[in-house]
Length: 153
Image 1 (spheres, rainbow, N blue to C red):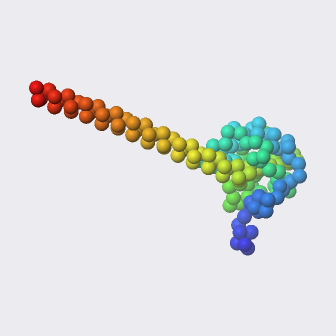
Image 2 (cartoon, one colour; image 1 turned 45 degrees about the vertical axis):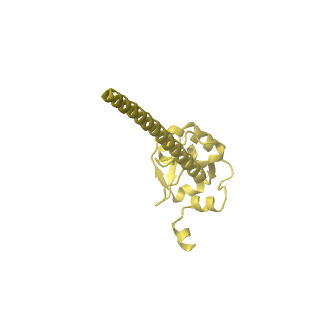
Image 3 (cartoon, rainbow, N blue to C red; image 1 turned 135 degrees about the vertical axis):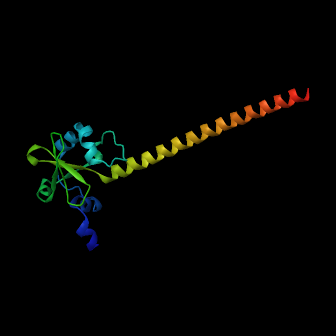
C-alpha cells in the first residue's frame, strides 16, 4: 500500500477511494464538454474513442492540486495539468476557480465498447469470407461438373 501511495497521483487516490475531490465544478465540466474535440487528445489515450463525455464521466478536482501539478499546453479556454509520472490530466477554468478530470471508469468503458466493436467487425468479416469461399467452392464444383459432362459426351 505504501508503494501505491508513493506513486499514485492525488487524482488516482481520490478515485480509488470513491471520493469526488472538489465540491462544485459545473462550469469546468461544461467547458470541458464544449472544448472536448480540443482536449480529448490530451485527456484520452489514443486507442480509446469517447465522442463527448457526459457529466457523469467527469468529476471535480480541487483547484489546490494545481500547486503540485505540471501545466500542459493545450489550445483551449482551459488550463490543464498533470502530475509528474502520471497520464491523468485535469483542466481548470480561467482563474482556477473550478477544475475537473475525466473519470478513469469512462475510459475503461469506452475501451470495452471498442473491443466489442472490433469483435463484431471480425465476426462479420469472417462470416463474409466464409460465404465467399462457399460460393467459390460451389461455382468450382459446378464448373468441374460441366467439364466432366462435356468430356463424357
